[in-house]
Length: 310
Image (cartoon, rainbow, N blue to C red; front, side, top):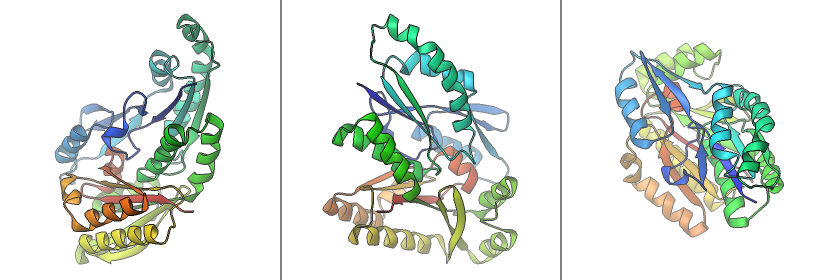
C-alpha cells in the first residue's frame, strides 16, 4: 500500500523534502502587478519574487489556489495511480481557500478514479483524506514532517498517521517575526485581524519594535514586542534551545524559515549552535525559504519557527 502526502507551497519545508515519494506539491497561482506565476515552492523562484515584488511597498502579491476542477485534473493525472492512499495537508481553512477547493475537487476525484486505476492494473482500494492543518507556514511543516516520519521511519499505516495528525495539529505553535511591519499591518487590516494595529505599526516603525506573532489552532496574536530584529532572533533561538534542553517537543523537529537568502541564517552562530544541540538530542532542525504566501503577509526578511508541544 503506497501512501502519498500532498502539501501546498504555503508549507515551509526545505526543497529536499519535495518530489515523488516524498512530499508532492499542489501549486498555487501568484498574482503580482499584471504577472501571474505558478508557485511550486522553488527556492530560487521564491527569492526572485521577493526581490522583484517585496523589495519596496509599491506592490501587493496575492496568492490564489487552483480551481477545484484544476485540482481534480491534477490528482487524476498524477496521483490516483501513483498512490493507494492520499493525505492532502491544507493550510488553515479560515485563511486559505485551498481546503475548500480541495474538498470540492475530492467529489470528482472519488467519482472518476476507478477507471484510471483499473486501466493501470491496480486493485487496491483508493482512499483520499483532505486535512485542515489549522495552522500556516512553518506550522504546516511540523505536520508534514510528522506525516513523513510516521510513514517512512515508523512505517505507520494510513489510519495511524491520520489519528496522529489530528492530535498533533492542536499542539503546534508557530511564530512569525516581521522585519518590515508595513505588510503585516496592511494585510491584517484587509483580513480584519488586529495582531498588529495602527499604534503598533507606527511605534514599530519609529522605534524599531518587532512584534512576535504567535499562531495556535488558527488564532493569532502578538505575544512579545522586541526592539530590533536581531534581538528578536535572540529571543527565538533561546526559546528553541530551551525546548530541546527541557524535552518539550511532541514531534522531534523544529521548523524554521526566513524571507531571504538562507545563508544569512545558516552562517549565524545561534543557528549553528541550535543545529548542534538538535543533533545531540535527535531533533531535526529544518530551514527553508519563507513561502511566497507568508512573504505577502509579513514582507521580505521575516523569520518564522514552529514546533509541537508534548
